[in-house]
Structure formats: C-alpha cells, structure tokens
Amino acid sequence: MEKLIALNEAPPDQMMENHLRPLKFEDFPGQEKVKEKLQVFVHAALQRKEPLDHTLLYGPPGLGKTTLARIIAETMGVKFRGTSGPAIRRKGDLAAILTTLKPTQILFIDEIHRLSSDIEEYLYSAMEDFFIDIITGEGMGAQSVRFHLNPFTLVGATTRTGLLKAPFRDRFGIRERLDFYDTQSLSQIVKRSALILKMNLNKEGAEEIAQRSRGTPRMVNHLLKRIRDYAQVKGKTLIDRKMACYALDQLGVNRFGLNQMDMELLQTIHTKFSGGPVGLDTLSAGLNEESDTLEDFYEPYLLRQGFIQKTPRGRILTEGGQAVINTVNNSGKKTPAQV
Image 1 (tube, rainbow, N blue to C red):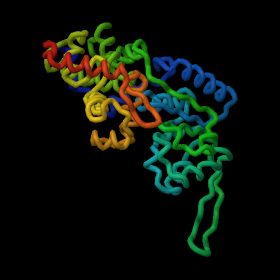
Image 2 (image 1 turned 45 degrees about the horizontal axis):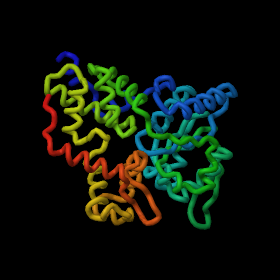
Image 3 (image 1 turned 45 degrees about the vertical axis):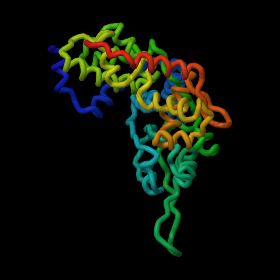
C-alpha cells in the first residue's frame, strides 16, 4: 500500500487541482484544432513582441478554458491575473485591476458573460485603445481623467456566448470553441493525473474512468481522486477496470457517464411528462434545480449524446434516452460488483 498511503501527504484539493493543470501546450491532450491555432497566434505575437489579441474561449464547463489561459500566459512568459465576472461589481473594481497590469500581461475573466452592461462598455476603450476614463470628485466638481494602460490581453471564458453583447464579443480578435473530449484524450489525461497523484493505474482502469467522465477533464480528475479514496480504504494498490467500476458504481456514475441528477432529469421527462416536450422552467421546478444549472451543466452532455433533444416546444426524450433508462433500470436490480 506504499504508493497509496503516501498520498495522505498530498496538498488540499484546490492546490492539487492547480497542480494537475498542464502548463504547456504539449502537455494538454485533446482540442487539437484549437490548440494548434492558439500556438500559431501566441508564437506570432511573441515574434512581433506584441500582446496577443484579446481571446474568447467558450464551451461547456470543465473543458479547460482556464487551463488554456494559463498555458497562454506561461508560453508568452507573462504573469497570469485571474478573476471572474461576478467578482467585478463596479467600474472601480475593474479600474483597480487594469491599472496594475504589466505590459503584455494576461487578464483572465471567468464567467465573463456575468459582467454587467456598464462593465462591458467600460472595457471597450480598454480593449481597443488601452485607456480608461476615471471620474474623480462628485457633483459639479466631478472630472474625467484619462488613464493610459499598458497593452494587455484579455482572455474571457464563458459557457454562454449568447449573453455577451455583439459589440463586446466582436472586440475579441480570437474566438475559439472548446468541445467535449474523446475517450482517447481523456485516457491520456487520466494517466497523466494518476502519475502526478502517484497512483498505480493500468490501461483498462484508465479507459473505464475516461468512458464515464462525460467527455470532461474536470470530471476525470474529480472521479480519479475519489477512486483513489476507495482504493486506499480497500487496500488496493492497483486501479484496474474492476476497481474503477466498483468505485464509480459506488459514486453513482453509470457506464454512460450519467450521475444521479442526469438520470433524474431523464426519468422526469419520461414519467412525469410522457417523454416531453417540457419547458426548461417546468423541468427545473420538477427537479428542484436552477434552470441555469440544468442548461449549462447537465443538458450539453445529454444533448451531445443524443439522450434528449431541444424543440421549439421544449425538451423531449429520444429513443437513445429511453434505452438508457431501460438499461439502467434493469441493471439496477443487480447488486454492484464487489471488490
């Protein structure tokens, strides 16, 4: 058990999450087309000794938008400055960040679609001409002072590009969409993370974890750390397919990569609404879950896999979704495999 017991000295989850993030394009599996284009843009900017064009990365959560932003900063040899849309509430908050940026530095704003309209418009001059106007004083004595900024690169990440105003979205010279990963790329991520976590993982175990990870690297690392816990308690030094299946079954992640909420969503459409169509708000009320959470986190994978379908009248259950329900219900009658 030496390899697994040594993991008790690992840093907290947040520190470990950062530790698992690759810092080079070469160490970032998947998203090949996006990666190739970003490498060209970054190296061209380095050769011209200019800041990279403002970049917008969008797609479902957990696909590596933050990681790519860090890789861009690392490749360009500049510091990474990160914040999020909800954290910037006033123009003064944004001004305090912008005025401290170094030349060609990366400013990363996660959930950029959650910036207020005033903040978006305040960024226009900063992004185009690298200046902002700061209001000093109050009432009749108020004055506008123009403050010039160091040239910088804004990297925005969003799951909902439709919420960005067109003038704001158009100011990003680079716009790239990240898609779900294939099993091969996820297997590479599993193996790399297992190596960092000092876990003994074989090929079959890695493939099983990859297949149940919803096409998402974040889910891969989340499941891998929880499987590590089960293996450690069971005294297993090797994570093979049997150990991975046992732990994943205990975690409620079935062989389709669906968790309890995914299955509840499918079952609700099937049983309460006769397969649909059902509106998002009605579905949200039936599941007691926020509609934004359903739309941003759960629906993209179910739509991608063809388990549900969006129609003008609402969501409907597909034949594939019905087959998943039947398969899971039948397999649920059996006891989980014991390790």
